[in-house]
Image 1: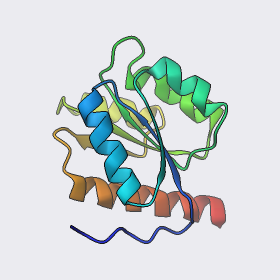
Image 2: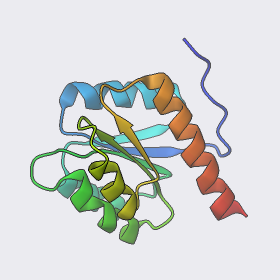
Image 3: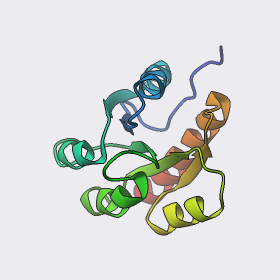
Image 4: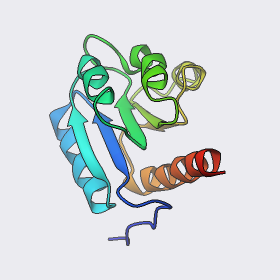
Length: 136
């Protein structure tokens, strides 16, 4: 087991949006081990409610979900919390999905199955980049 990364700010908060219960649980455990305060929800609709109540440093969302997809919710996430970093997860390895995700505000894209070592690196990259933009 790797040591958790040292993040540039304490009490980082992540919102996990994933309709698959097992994946959501794995992500929640992973982020808790990394020192994040976590909230997890199963639908894009629920995302908007929680995003208006709490400030997040990072949102990680699945692309393919029933109802509102990850692509559908990205612009509104950025409208509600413009500073939040977003990582999207997709099982579909076409170039189209990441391109659309980046156009709509995603900072990084990760293919399923999730490799937690790769996710750890992405988190570090987007959180550091966010801090540099916000913190100066």
